Amino acid sequence: MPRTITFHYTLRDAAGRLIDTSLGGPPVRFVEGDGTIVDGLAAALPGLPAGARRTVRVAAAEGYGERDETLVRRVPRRAVPVEHLKVGDQFQTAPDRHAPIVTIAAIEGDEVVLDANHPLAGVELDFEVEILNVAAPPPAAGQIQSPSDSM
Image 1 (cartoon, one colour):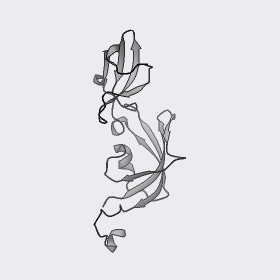
Image 2: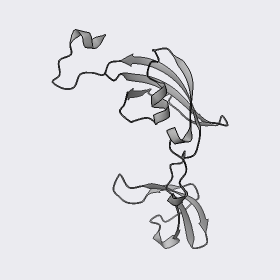
Image 3: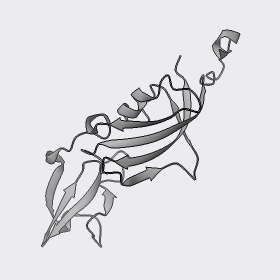
Image 4: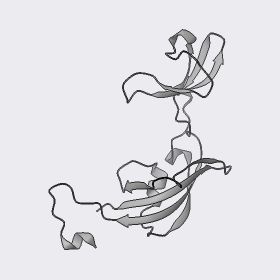
């Protein structure tokens, strides 16, 4: 039965630059196998008890994937649905919430270079994690939990 793991993390790139942290905010709740965190981190958490602290190095392929240069495109400026452009800005390519998010990689005259890779694609990641709690997931609605399920 998958467990629910509650943890705090600090994320750095391989050079040690801070990328993100949950410290100072709510911790992350993750159910083993639910696909909500990157594969490399998800594979490192099972078996860790509450109170454990660990640094987990995640290769790019097990994080946000390797960079795919076919996802970098030059488009005419007039085709970009954003009025004021700056390198580094991001926007969603369509109103559908599943539409790709692109980053403006460059502005070159009447052309804009758009990058649909995740900003952390190709980056080796170091997660410093502290496991706060490990528990069996709550029973699904209408499901009765047997005494052996809570052990």
